[in-house]
Image (cartoon, rainbow, N blue to C red; front, side, top):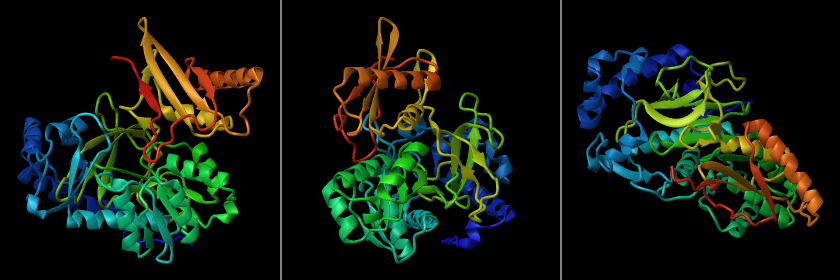
Length: 433
């Protein structure tokens, strides 16, 4: 039987959801207009005042915000309440230039904790579970978000943070952890490590995993579920909006329910900004409805996905977003072709490889080079040159079929590509463009 953390909201009829959104949006636009000069100027440039926004039907009139705006306003330019009312910041995981800094009041954190608690319950969690949070803590939102949700639900929370894999395994086994929260690439690495230690899926006490913060494919999900003996759930969020818990998967595992009482989602054409109809693939845009400290309106996430209101068997009525295909700003354009790392991962996993690979792009004599290093699994590792060449050709043909362009594949020995304890570094683009 499906359980909910806040059934009256999670299963509310569409009319009630829209009524909540209408009321909150009008208040939020007024809040931003009154307190954020930068956004007030953006509205004035479009000849808008808060009086022009009477419901969510008027949302499309409002200007977009992008990461460039956030960097321009660093650190306090988008703060919408007195600094004394803020109790925490978080920051994006980027390492170049000015980082995006997001502010939180206690009310903002309470709302975020509720969203993450909903996600844990949707993954089968109760207050009797032991939740091991192996996302990074600190400025990254992953650890703090799932930690707060776990506390809100009343679970025993094990705040291991990322890294120190032997200790992670020790706590999973000794404390009989039942729910694991981390990035999918680290979950795959933990599963690989536990298998090497001699643990079979039936030996591992985990029943579910909540994995996010990076793109991962259905093939990778199946691999993690198999090695750990769990059901693997996706979770979505971004530092700028509220960290993990903006959307989460239910037992159906067919798209992530967006917490629509707190966030409005739109899909736009990334080139024109036009709002697209339900079911169209495009760029995801979010509006925070009740964030006090750092309320972003029509924030362009750069994530490419679709939205659907098709009835879900779990009983939740909030709109669902598909697993992002990739990011419009992470998308590689190689020889004029759009390439997403997730497409490459699908080909590798479909051919029996683990999700340990690296894409290296360069430009030589004005031509793009496209190389992919792929780690062989221990059972396929061989020094038989003919077999390696045969495997390379199968992968290169599969990639050409998927992408429409040729890639040069190098098969390397197991464990020769550096493992990541946070977000995996999949792409090295050496082009000076």
